[in-house]
Length: 162
Image (cartoon, rainbow, N blue to C red; front, side):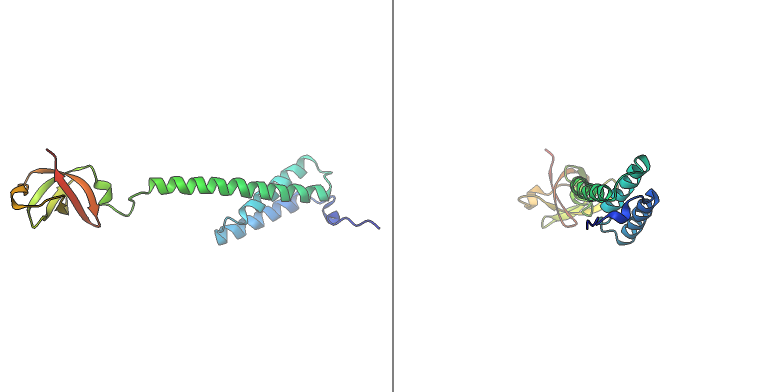
């Protein structure tokens, strides 16, 4: 006696695969795991293939579903990793406003005492620290232009531009 494990899929309607695909997609939307996305896409692909080849055997359907699930998972995870890596590169300094100002010019608003003072960039006032030796003979005058060379939290590190 021969038993066909996937015999119940013989002659099944492609809409069964569409329903499985939509169900897995709905669960994926609720969980945000990216785990059920791949089998959902594979089920949708099997549905399309079954519309094209309605006499496809149940074992063939199950095999195609399994292979497509694994293929979509591997390709999808590689693509997601690339997207996340690209997103991290673009987001550098996203929550560090002061770090995004490195290389910009700042105007001294308030004189520096003990190496700490206030500068203005695009009309915004920033606390600043003089880079290197902050002796009294090196203090920049109010209105002088300095270059932002670094950032320490919300304090800019500035140096003379000359």
